[in-house]
Image 1 (cartoon, rainbow, N blue to C red):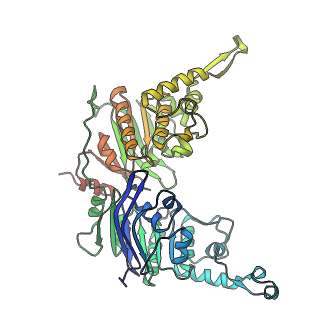
Image 2: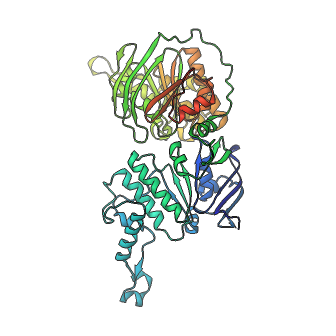
Image 3: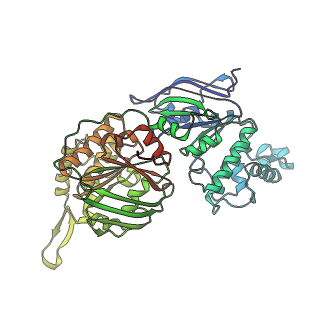
Length: 534
């Protein structure tokens, strides 16, 4: 026996020719709390998908490398097999049934049964639920995680923090759990709830269960974990003990973002952005976006610049553009060229020549079962009455959609943006991710914006398409003079194309950095600290 409950050796994974994991090794001992950290896209989720035998792994060619669990080499064919073998997971997004009670959720699919007279005659089908055991087991699990609530309460209506503890109690109640994975367990919790959850994790580990703790909150990682593995770009940068003096929040953050970034030699602008030429003012912006709340951000955006907004997941960076554009409830003041833009009304932002590319391309940005032509023109039609014509004359004339002008405009965008498709009539669903993103950009350009807010433009697309999207945004900035606010979880992308980068932590602006600032300074900002400027 090696002494490890889990060993993952040389794990390598390709998606359609794009390598997302390269020779990754992760080892966890019984009773150990092992932190797993890295920026979005570092490979953490893919590694866990491999461990749990997720269909997305098996359906895309599998993986290379070896997994040993409890001393035996294995590959799980499905999540159910992983769970039955003794691996549990507490998800960031709740996997509870609101209409069931707390106890019913804890024992779901593992309900204890008791014999009845009919059961003895007709077999298992006539057995009844053993409610006394369901209640007692659920109470014991809730006590272990420190949640003293009535186990017969319905889950619907419980506070968010309570739901997270019910998730943990469900895993604790399972018999034979040897490894428990926590995926951003405190992302939606208050500070007090987070402290209680961390205490529960320590109790679970003390019972001999191995824990993998995935979190962007580096202070929590240091406070609870025995060791931490840092991933970057699909590889393990290092694994270190948290008891070492060199293992600090700043050091971990620097390792997460510390790759050298070579900035492309993009063409110069006709006019460089100036400190005194402010096109957009954001003052004390607060946004109620679940998981990405903003708690008071003030920004001054220079005309003609590319301003980056970065930060770790759940720290509020995505909420800023969504709040400015009225997608989520917001408070504060936003003004363009001194003219205030009423919040919570997307139409008002569009009228002031702002346009938005949402991070949720498939559910918000596109209508997948409509044509490229329709997707490009629909917002401009609704907001600016473009691509319309009048049927009839005088007072009896009615405005209808002008398919010809919409198709001509779409054809022009397909050519200009190099959208790879069969023509304007092709369904957007049948395009690659990169070409779908170009359709989103074309739709924004139809509004002829002066300011383009872009959120996570390269999420979910391959490496080559990522670079083409970034090149396109720079081209819009350089050739059309468009001011761009670019929100991204990939710091390397921001450092590649932006003039300045605002780093958000805890819903607030921590620092405004140059893309050429040191990795150490970026690491500090990403962990919520502002470096003292010498």
